[in-house]
Length: 296
Ligand code: GUN
Image 1 (spheres, rainbow, N blue to C red):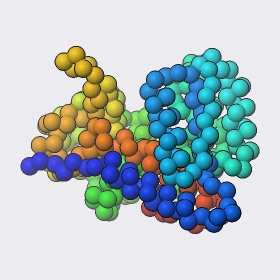
Image 2: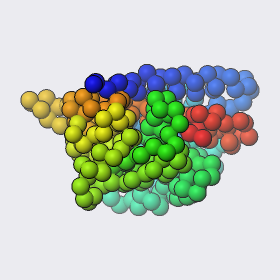
Image 3: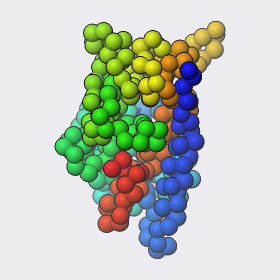
């Protein structure tokens, strides 16, 4: 058996097209949705992400504001920018690109963003809202995985799901989303005993540990749906390559469906950022929210 390879690139394009269509439908005299992205320092990977975010924001018909700050920026200066953007009625989404330099307290910064504009879903209010089943801004990468899973499987209720990784950005919110979908959820991590056996239980396996090709084909239940969130740069035969947390070559022989790296979950993240910006805009302006774009 060979797994279906889930085309996240095509699905992300369809999400962006739905967002763009909704933006184009807004009344002519209304302000367009605005997304502000703050980048502190010059991390090369972050610079690429921020550039892509800006391009896709503009392509969706939204306004993009970029704030670039030096790597030695004091926390107070960053907080002042966030306060200004919180108060700006032309800005509906605020994203602080992570990681932040060491002199800055990341959790304090994330909690300074107005929860209504928190398109990353990292503010403690949105984390709590998601955990208690209230309307929340849902973190982009888990939201992207949820859309792909629903598209392939329909209802997720009653399914055995294993999330490998417990980060605040992916693992924990992914587990909350799958619980909300009535899955039976196990969160595994680097200290889990018999990780291979735990993975073999999964009808839905989400890999988000940041370890290249950790999860091999013989860890996967036949027919499982595999979401590979990992983006790991490795040197092979003198060339740089991107690989996931799943060993694709062996997994594709066992899984029912799998996301490739690149071209799987990755493109969904920015598409969901645009969807979240639209959701924030609609909530702030009292307009109906597109449920399937908000992960509701
Ligand atoms: N850095 C890596 N992933 C993310 C993300 O989803 N949001 C932000 N803000 N920074 C990141």
